[in-house]
Length: 126
Image (cartoon, rainbow, N blue to C red; front, side, top):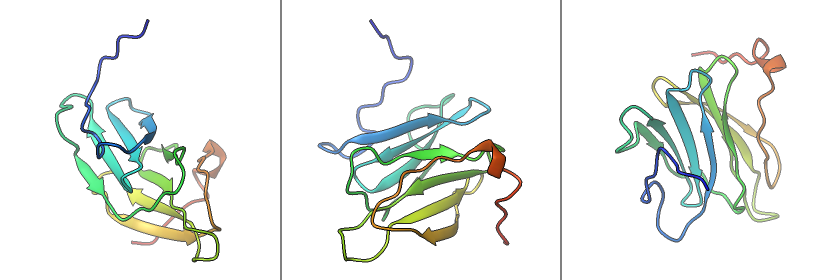
């Protein structure tokens, strides 16, 4: 039996999936990715409303991920499109401000994993 410490039924739009919930490496923040085309950042010490929310992140799959970079400075998620209607993207957000800092066109669908080996390889100009 599981007894969750945090439970917020309205985290994402009713009738949509929450496809990913991931904790930051410092353990104070979590990110959630929803089928309502949003990415949200939550402070677990005040878990009554999101710190930030980004919309316009289309997802066609109920397993779209999000993750923190190993240094906890970035959050990345993927977007997806119908075949033949453009490209899916990797979309990077700065954790502190939730500003969209970079996008990379990939393919129709994207699965996200940020290996620690890339920590020193991924740099974005401000």
